[in-house]
Length: 168
Image (cartoon, rainbow, N blue to C red; front, side, top):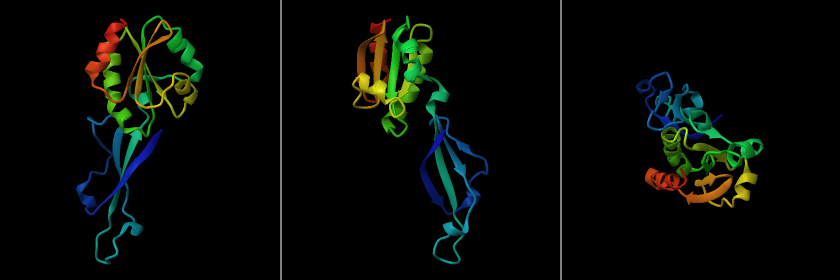
């Protein structure tokens, strides 16, 4: 699932490649070029047609850390024998997008020692309400089914690593 973040209109369509442009440093984002159309012309009759650029954001669950929802919350988080890190986020949240790569890296670094999941607060508001989530991103660490620690905001990797190390 992708959502349009912003549409840009540029004057020179010939400067762009015809294939989608991908930005590896911005995971989950791609830029698509669409055809020029008459309704995108400027008011001046001799002006060249403009091209519309659409920037889309992909669902981050497909890129790394798995999503957890109401039906599988109990089995994946509460009953897990390993410590569990859960990120509460929403697709419209800018700081959430900033912390996604950090969570993905931590999931790889602590594979086998820690389980990592993401909860979309728009889709699973009951879980967010149950744990008193009022700001996102919020990262909660669970151990033996109990909430041990919560970190609110887009924090550096070192902050999360310090929290994780306490419960391993």
